Image (tube, rainbow, N blue to C red; front, side, top):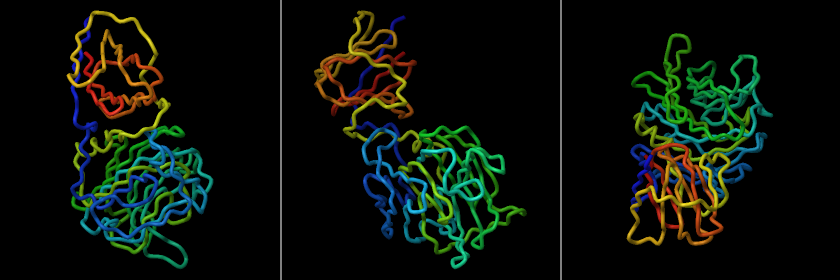
Length: 353
């Protein structure tokens, strides 16, 4: 069967257009905890968080916490972090747990992010929080990941959750929407809606209000602590659409210089392969690269030695990331579809049929 692919020189590597309307906070954690949104927010304080490679292998591009009481990040209170400011709050974040049983937990779970403090000297400041349960807990909720809203006085909260197996080290895109207009809390995992529940009901009677507790990452109330990595935290002052949520999940890697093959690579690579004339090739007028394809095997020649190669699928998932030792690489694709190659500074879209 003849395989046909078309190559396009692209001006931009990203497939997804990340929404910026209503973006009040953005923390990419690229070597610091600075807010990169257009909104001016008070600077935070990093308490022993360590910057580590992100989900694409880019060095110092995510923040890691060790699960102890001294490891978290804290940002001073601001109206931008409160649901009640506009009546809606959408929070998008990538997280990767380093354990399934957290060493400092509270009643079988930890809060890995949130805005709320409830201690003997600081009460009346509970707002919202993200929770993850230990693998074993008395409520029989193994590694459940959830989003809750609370009355300022604390007590039981309203929430939605994802109850699926979790693997140590996997990156999960978690997104929660608090929507007072629709009276809903919705949670998404990897771009897919997993649960939707009432924000206010007659059981919990949660009425969201603005407290003065700081926003914390890696903990919420300093009672329990997350062991793992956090990246690309975005907070919006509005409800996001389904397409915008997918765009956030499909966010593509930056043009970093990291080398090494991703442990989640699903494309096999080898240094040589016999070429077959049963292909059609569209070559760039400005590139010395020579590309050929047969079945689902792509041969790329004319590569400058030492160039970085990044291959992603149509969802923006990294399949291969490596530094090329020679000037030729053969890639074996798992299925038909659109793929994106970045070799050095040149970007190509490959459609395999």
